[in-house]
Amino acid sequence: MSDAALPLLGSRRFLPLFITQFLGAANDNLFKNAIGILIIYRLLVDNPGLSQVLVSAAAGIFILPYMLFSSIAGELADRMEKSRLMRLIKMAEVAIMILGAAGLYLGDPYLLLGVLFLLGVHSTFFGPLKYSILPQHLKPEELIAGNALIEGGTFVAILLGTIVGGLAILLDGGLGLTSILLIGVAGGGLASSLFLPKAPANQPGLRIDWNLWRGTLDVVRTVTRIRDVNLSVIGISWFWAAGAAYLGQLPAFAKQVLGADQQVVTLMLAMFSIGIAVGSIVCERILKGEISARTVPYGALGMALFSLDLFFAGGMAAHSGAELGIGGFIATVPGLRVLADLFLIAVCGGLFTVPLYTLLQSKSDPRERARAVAANNIVNSLYIVVGSAVVIGLLKIGAGVTGIFLAAAVGNAVVGAWAWRLVRRQA
Image (cartoon, rainbow, N blue to C red):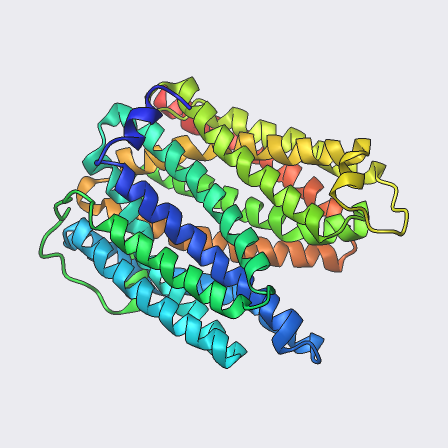
């Protein structure tokens, strides 16, 4: 960890936000994975077709609020004092998790999906706050370090939440343990939010537009007016779409191509998540506080090269018919190569995204900063939906799982070439 990042972790200007964000991301994924496994292995075990449909729909249910309510979330974050609004949102998370615990005990999959939607609403309203508050509490030269810690911490939290949710729910007494964890983590997030320093409203008295369609268009226009911000949003959105494509294909890649079991999927997810954290810190060390996009093209090129190698590594794998566990998988050359590729793709992802988030914050109009972050969330969601449709289309025409990685390599190479435009603009 860098010399700039360590002081932030000991500072009240940053640590409460980091903890609040970390616990929120962990809880989101703990709940999502827990209910997915519960639906498949317990609630609808006799109806696998319906269980697959509901679990597949879960991702869309969680992301839908970002598309619907981000405009209102951004306007509220610009209008209100941010620490107070964060505490209100964290209080709502505790209530949502109490409802989620009730859903677990009742065993109603539709109630659980409804709670997942509410959790998506919670995350929608928290998102503009966590990024727009950073420039108010941190010095300009600290923004890169702050974003690196937030980005890296988020992916580690996603990993922990996913693993814990999957393990806890199927234990004896798993419903009670999972419920305690969900409510306890939400309560921890609320407690940490109490220590957030005040962050004055960016635009007090801003009128909230409750027309979702008109409000969404207006918020998106806030990022199209400033070229650097617009390009940053496009780059961040590409990363989330590509990341969703990678992570979404890991189970099929492990089972169908590599002949590996579910534990190997978890290991691959761990390598990707840790890689993002490492790449974020490496980016901060390279830039040393400079607000610059100069690592972005190299990050995209690295993602392209290692995605291409992942494609070839899949072609090398020899499916023996018996599923490999972690021990057997890491004893093979293709297995080690796949893990290295996923780790390095993610490291390059950190080099790619951290500067873009910092540019989004630093170049946007301070009066509209939260709305710019909200617009970014809207565009991210659209890219993920379109990316998912492209993945489905490629699979329909027989591209296969490894074909998705090849397409991602080509896309990253194109984005790398595009990124030079942003770098030249700053030069």
